Amino acid sequence: MAEISFDDFLNVDIRVGRVTRAEPYPEARKPAIKLWVDFGPELGEKKSSAQITTHYTPETLIGRQVLAVVNFPPRQIGKFLSEILVLGLSDSNGDIVLIGPDQDIPIGEKLH
Image (tube, rainbow, N blue to C red; front, side, top):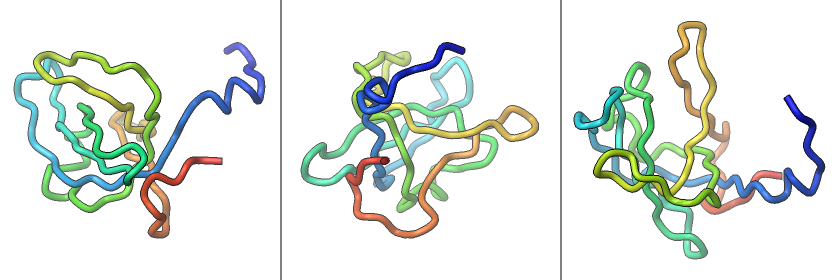
């Protein structure tokens, strides 16, 4: 993988948000959940489609803080417009586990 500069890193806007709404997305090619994430007054609420159905249900996601890249261009996922990339790591089976802070953080805070 190519090295990046510190300036490259600074161009990636990763922020903490709180999931305000989550719904199954059965129309997706791979099982997914539609998420609405609040990033506070500066960015507002943004949408994402995430393939996280192994470890999460829509009900367990409400109120959870997550990290997301908020400065990607929107991407059409089927009939749903995804505006952010919610971040996660693959477990030993390749299923996604979300990344979030271990303490409550003011929404909209930027990753340093």
